[in-house]
Image 1: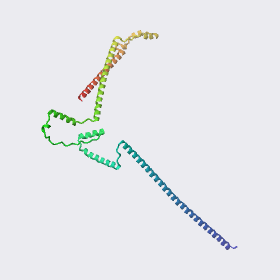
Image 2: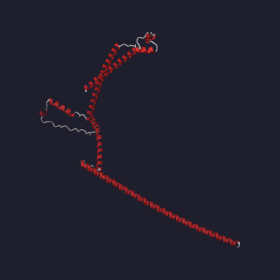
Image 3: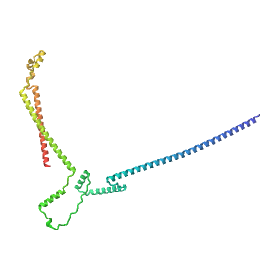
Image 4: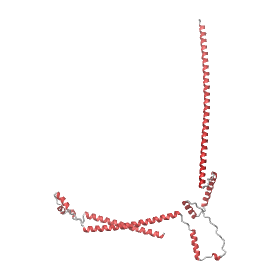
Length: 309
């Protein structure tokens, strides 16, 4: 075989291989396109299925909500019916409609505005009465002034009266116009009276207690003076002598010695302590007397104030 034949044969084989490769590529592309179309179809089906499921869930949720609302309305209706039945049994009037209640609230607001405007025309006494009524939890109503009857009596002799009758009428009119004390004012007066009586009892009890203490103190001082007069201080004790003798010493000789530091002393330590104790007792007695005098003055002042009231 020559070179040309080999060359043609090689070219034919290469062309066949290229054709085979092109056919395989075309098949692969067709298969890939088919797979892509299948995936898109499945994706569309999945989206449609999800939309249907979402719609079903929304419908179920809506149905549950409607059922719940209907159940709540039914319960509320039953409660209202039971409440109305109980009120009917108790003899109470049934509650008004919401629209009527709203209208009443609007009317109350308007009335409150009118009362605020009318407050400017109240007198000082009426304002004070209004504050008292608010504190007591009552409703304040402004007193309406009725016009006086200007018609003159026909019989002058019938209208005339004696001075005694005029005075009785005057007292009756003043008593009629006098303001009646409220429960709060009566309670405050009673508390003030109780407090004053309690204070008077405390002052009287403290005064009697101080007098008893003074008597006890006087008795104690008298007994102390008698004791000092009857029993002078005795420093001799046989037991001490025995104790000194155990150590081979004599206490009488030691006590009989002259001590230079005691030559110019007018009183020993025991007498000084006794004088200090007596001075303290006298000072305490003077303080108690002054306190009793102050309490007595305060008691007289309270009695004078109670007599004036």
